[in-house]
Image 1 (cartoon, helix red, strand yellow):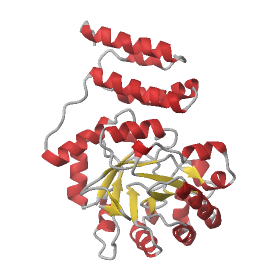
Image 2 (tube, rainbow, N blue to C red; image 1 turned 60 degrees about the vertical axis):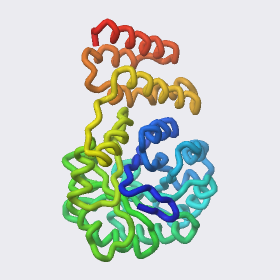
Image 3 (tube, one colour; image 1 turned 180 degrees about the horizontal axis):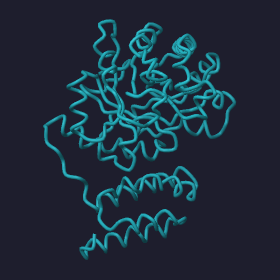
Image 4 (spheres, rainbow, N blue to C red; image 1 turned 90 degrees about the vertical axis):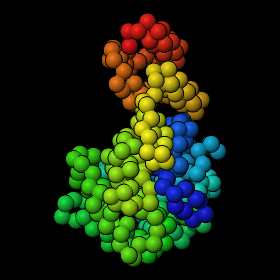
Length: 328
């Protein structure tokens, strides 16, 4: 699958942009376990144009993260175009437009998934961004606003017509948020629409290698994107890639690998941010990193209260000792 000049392989597995999750540290971790492409957290076009420091920070990335896309959101074509030019200067492989974020603070201000209620505006924004930059422009969106407006087949055609070079579709409506089961049927219809010439990437509920294979075979998508399933579980990329390659399921990572990966993730985050902020944000990942480890609940509870790197390191070291004694 190619997007512009970027060749992502026969069936790439991509890391979805997730606010307050897919920062540079986590992107680098996921890349190390086989993610073929990663995206920044979504960036407000208005904030980027106004030179807000937090948004400027979000578009920065390490060379180890390539290929990478910078994702933008907003509802004003001019601001989105200007933001895309600024994002292009950071040197990513592509610019992605967020037409899928369902959270109230975004959608109720006319951005993200709200544009599914105003397709002409969505098209104007997309066309403005495509014309503003030399990089490939892609879109991530949903099936529609609600059950009565699942019009993604037609939307995808119109987005392609104004120049996007790939589309990622999350198999839920905005009304569903993240509840219920992702419906890949319409994703398959988009992919199998004879008018579609660009790659179609599926997203939603891919939490195992078996599911990834089933979605590929059942719907014919060109690639898959992993979102919440990767939180605290970067090994999912390795598991999927190996299963697609040889049909063999890999063993879940041993406790030692979990600890070392979690520590590395934390250290990368501390390097990029203030220690306290990095520690607080890392709390979202602990449940995933140590899911399935017996007798871990009280240790996780302790990790969620610690505010210094040295204290957390002591807990990790004690985990190794407890493991040797056969308690966990």
